[in-house]
Length: 195
Image (cartoon, rainbow, N blue to C red):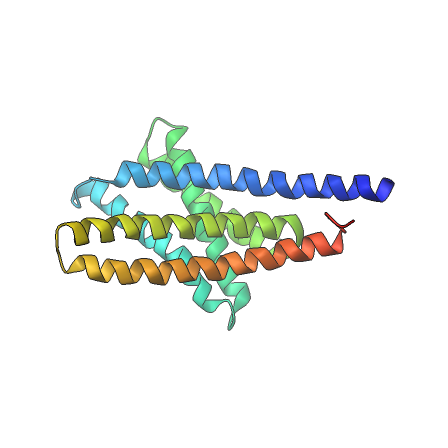
């Protein structure tokens, strides 16, 4: 009975960590994406839109280094994901001001890197990977909307963005596999959901 209770408690911890990270990271990326849509690519707003694209796409690209240099890929993915969160909430907590948003992005990127060094297993790794998958998924969404717009207007860039969308879908799948492995290890090591 005590083992079942402990297993159930660990299962709830897992669900809460994943749900919380999806909510926090998802809210941040969607707010940034929808504020960027339709912005002109000139001035400060244009620079921010380009930086948003680079950070979202960079997070997905870190999946390419998972096999050769997993610690570097994991650290970069954690830092970029945390930077997105810091930028969104740093700016929104201070009336959409740019400087606090940038400071929030830098500070959380440092925290993300620090946590990636000490959170390679367990709930911390699951939290970090959930954030990475969420940010990489946002890159798929952003590229996909651009692809749809290009194809709808019969512009040749639509085809390129369709290819990029497929590529980033694969990269997100790679990070999702890593997340699945961490969840499996966590559940196996703690007899979560086992009869």
